[in-house]
Image (cartoon, rainbow, N blue to C red; front, side):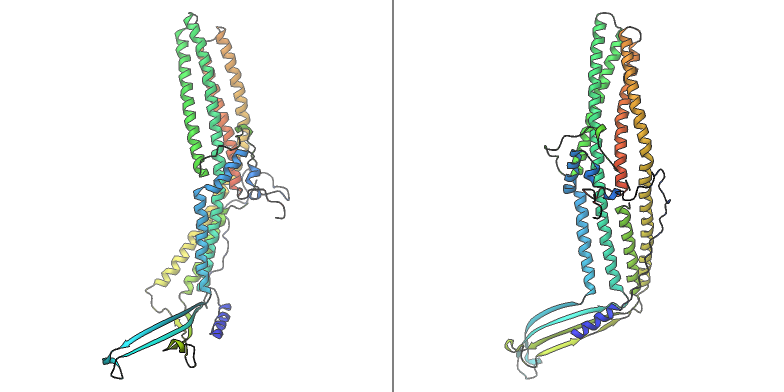
Length: 462
């Protein structure tokens, strides 16, 4: 049996593969990103090597990301899928090796008189101990192709887990920034309510003294109710954003989290490589390519070697005595002759699946290219929008102060104050939204460029 297994291993070493040679499809995108900055200097750290703790400087956000990576259920499922495909790969890989088993049995049998050669009932016992080995000669690479396909599926699942990891890190950062923006919206709505309530009280005293028209009083009253509505709506949005953040984190937020940093003081940095979802698509393509080899090999003969050896005796005491040894060697060859077109159809399925994976791989590249391009194009525009909106808020604040002074001096009507206050509130809201958009853009760019996998920035040479 040892010689048989050695011979089988030698044949396997020279076996061929019918899988087509893998060639990475050309990227169906432009050679450079629109709006991309000048090339980074030599030795600059790529986005994928920037640790999220170094990109997100807010200690509270860092704590939330760490909690999410530990508790998020979607990420946990992605990790379990990796373990599942790894186990499936080990099952498939095991077919490349001989299958060896040991067995033992005891049989006691009674032969009736009608069937006994001696004319009397016979009771006999047989003790049997042995082992068996079986092995398929993978001459045409069928088993190796299936093993390669399973391995690439494992790699694809691992990259999918990395992609889920990156998406979670970016998702927590984006949702946290949204909660900070809603906190600012609530603070703005509350301060606006306090201001219009104070203005309403002054207007009411003027009306009671006969110096102010009732129209101004009712206009001020409308202003107060509008501000109350805006405050309630902002508080609702803030609470819903907090609930969404809890879902991402996967656990109730601890009471001892660090204090949050203001939205306009969030320190976020970001830069540029290939993304895990692109790599996952390529591994899926490689797996489909290997499956074609297995489908092609199915047209050729399958050769299996089975051998067994052991010892048998009618008495347990004589089981290992002289002349009790037994063995069997049973090579088998199977050649498909007529399968009703099933083999041809299986090959067609494998080739179509490869074409599908090619299209999905190209689509993943196009999607990644667009994500980066959109983020780069938006970056410069958002910086300019933030500058302009900040200047607008200052101008609207001055306009409101002047209109209020002119109204108190009896120069303008209260309608001028109302219009200025509404425009100021709208400008302040837009400034908060622009700050959020700019910070979210940096998070999106960090994710689009493959960042978020590392906790700390990689040190050169590691």
